[in-house]
Length: 532
Ligand SMILES: Nc1ncnc2c1ncn2[C@@H]1O[C@H](COP(=O)(O)OP(=O)(O)OP(=O)(O)O)[C@@H](O)[C@H]1O
Image 1: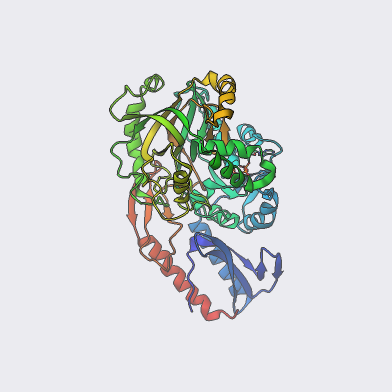
Image 2: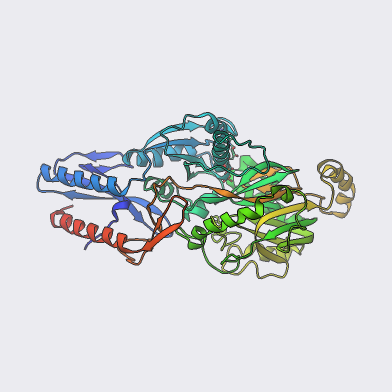
C-alpha cells in the first residue's frame, strides 16, 4: 500500500520514534518520524506521523536532511515567529489550556517561535498591537472567539492607519493594507469567523492551517458609522432586531458560558419583537454572483479573485464620499429603500456559518468580493419566524419565504422610526407603561457587530476596499492550494499563480502533479525500507 503526502503538508521530520502530543520519544539512530497533515471527516485536519527505518544511521540522516530541504523549499511562506493573544475567559475559559496542550507542541514541532500575551482585560490585545514591536513577526494569532478576533482586527487596522498617517476618526478614510495576517485558534463560544473561513471549529485544524500557511482570501471589511463617525469595523455579521437582542440579553448571562446564546435565543424568540424603521441600501450591479445562486465561496474562489479589478472601478463611485454621508437615495437608481417593521435586519460579509448553522445566514456570500448580503426579515408570526430560523439548520432555502428578502449590497443606512435621542432613554420609558400593558415591542433594538453590542440604532455601513487577511502571509507570486484538495486523490486540483495585487496570472494543474509524482517516488523509496 502506498501513501502519498504532499510535501507542502509535511510538518517536520525528527530522528527516532517521536510522539509529540504525548511527549514520548524513543531515540534510535536508524529510525526517523515524519509528521504530516491528515485530512479526516469534514474539514478537520489532524497531525499524523509515520515511523521509518533506514539501513543505517547515515541513511537516516540523509533522509532527514533531504526531507527538511524539501519542506524549506516548498514552505517558504510558513511563519517563523508569531505573536499569540490568549483570552483566558473566552468560551468555556479553556483558551490557555487549549494553547498549552494542543497548539504550543505543534508550533514547537514546526519550528515556530511564539510570543504569548494572555489578556487581562477587554481591549488589552488591541492596545498591545498598537504599541508592540512587530518587527520580524510573521503573523498574529488569537486564541478566543469572535470578539477576540475583532479586537485583533481593530488593533491591526488601527496600527496600519497610524503608520500610514491616516486619522482613524476620518469617516472618509480608506484602510491602509497591513502585511500581517491573523490566524484564529477557536476557543470562544460561537467562533463564527473561524468556522466560515476554515470550515470547522477545531483548534488543531486551525493550528495546522497556520503552520502550513494555508490562507483564506483577504477578507472584506465593513466600516460601521454612527452620526458620520466610524464606530467599528466588521468582517462578519452586523445585525439589528433579533440578533442584536439575543446578544444584548446574552451579555447579561456571560456566567452561563456558551449556553447563554441558547437561553437568550429562546427568550428573544418568545418575545417576538419587531422594530420600525427605514432601510436604504445600494445594490451591487454587474456582479457575476447573487445571494441565491447556491454557490459556496472556497479558497481560490474566482469571484473573489476577480473582485480586485471591480473594486478599483468602484472607487470612482466612492470618490465623492461626502455624498455618501448626506442622504443616499438620491445618488442613483441602484439605491433602494424599504420602510416597515422588521424582525431582523442582517448584513453579513461572509456566510456567517457556525456549528449550529453549517451553511450560515447567507450560504452563498463571498469572503472577499467587496460585497455583503443584506437579509431583511419583515414582521411575521412566531411560527413563521421559527420556520425561518429552522431553515438555517436544514437544507431548505431560508430566503424562499414571503417575508424574507435578500440583496447583495455595498452600503446600508438604517434610520429607526423614532428619533435616536428619544430612544434608549425617554421613548422606551414612555413606551414602557403602554408597552407593559399591551406587550408592545420597544421602539429600538441595538446592533450586533461581530458579537459586540453597538448601543445605537441609527447607523450606516459601508464596505471598505482594503481587506483584512486571514491565515498567514504568503510570499507572492505563489501557489495557493485549495484546502479541500488532496494531491494524490484529485490530480485535477486548481493552482493559482497570483501577483501582489491578488490578480490571477495563471491557473494550471502541473505543479501539483509534479509534487504528487515526486512524493510518490519518494514514498516508494521509503516503503522499500520501511519496517514500522
Ligand atoms: N482578560 C479578559 N477579561 C475580560 N474580557 C476579556 C479579556 N480578554 C478579552 N476580553 C474580551 O472578551 C470578549 C469576548 O471574548 P471572546 O470572543 O474570546 O469569547 P466569547 O464571547 O465567549 O466567544 P464568541 O465571541 O465567539 O461568542 C472580547 O470582546 C474581548 O474584548
